[in-house]
Image (tube, rainbow, N blue to C red; front, side, top):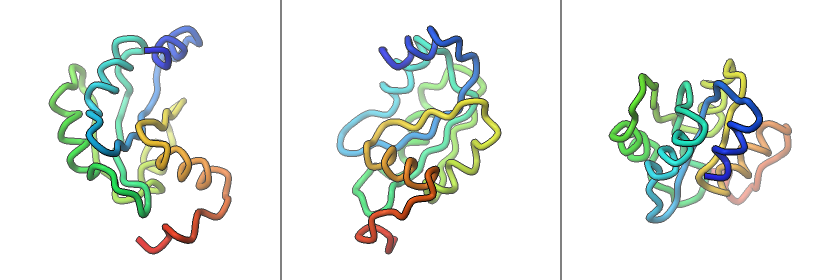
Length: 121
């Protein structure tokens, strides 16, 4: 709820969401809590960070579609790069759900090399 409240307090009216979840976390709970505070994102892309065990992008997208209460595109992407590219036109992109995802997205956006251990996927 804190993240959604911070977005609302900053006057964020429109954002895109890139999400991945690991383990037993329910991505729908995260999305509905965020939407309750900041409103629904304009689009959602799910993805799978390289080399990490996460729920598949397709499964996360399917779960999110079950709770969406607004006209919202929820689409799986094969890679974090593809997910970020798909939402490039959004005024703000929120990357959340998995620290693996956030770390990979930060490296991509900064143009830094990613961990070579996980580059073979």
